[in-house]
Length: 90
Length: 103
View 1 (cartoon, chains in turn orange, yellow):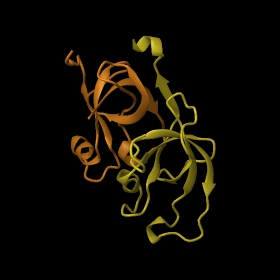
View 2 (cartoon, rainbow over the protein chains, first blue to last red):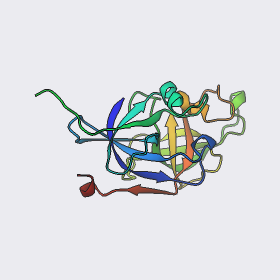
View 3 (cartoon, one colour):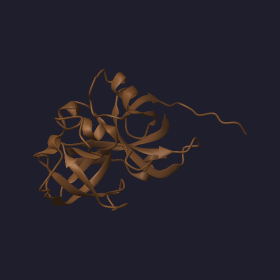
View 4 (tube, helix red, strand yellow):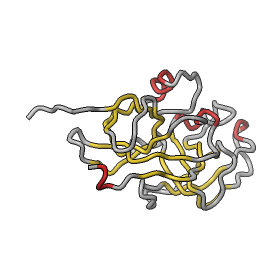
C-alpha cells in the first residue's frame, strides 16, 4: 500500500462499464512526512475521501477487486483509508 | 511509473492511431491508439505507447486515462488477450486543488 494525498477528482462520461458510478481520484504519491514525490496515480475511492486529504492507497489488482466486490473488474488502485497521522522514528 | 508494463491508471493524450493488418484473434476490431503519457499537470512525461481502446470511442487529441499490466486486458471484451495498456475512460475534466490549498 502507498501513502498519497488526494490532488483532485477526475470525471468523464465515457468510461469502461466497471467505472460507472465510481469516484475516481487523482492521488499524488507522498513520502511518510507528507512531501510529494512528484508521481501520481488515479484510484477508485472506497472510503469517501475528499480533496487534500492524506490517504492510504491499495495498489494491487486482486485486493482491489476484493474491496470493490468484483470478480473481473479492470481495477488495480483503490483508496482504502484516510490517514490522520503518520509516526516515524526519530 | 513502476515496473515496465505495470503502470497504475494514469492520464494520457491520444496522439494518433495504429492500424494493424493482422492481429491476435481476441483483438480483432479493438482500436489501437498512440498515447502520450502525461503528468498530473498534463505535461507530456515518458515515452509514447500503444494502448487498446476499451471505450472504443477515444480519438486523436482527447485526454484519456489508461491502465497498464494485467488489468489492461481485463478491460477488454475478450479478457485473455496479449494487451499491456488499455484506455478505460475519456476524461471530461479534472478538479485539481491548488498546491497552496493542499498545505
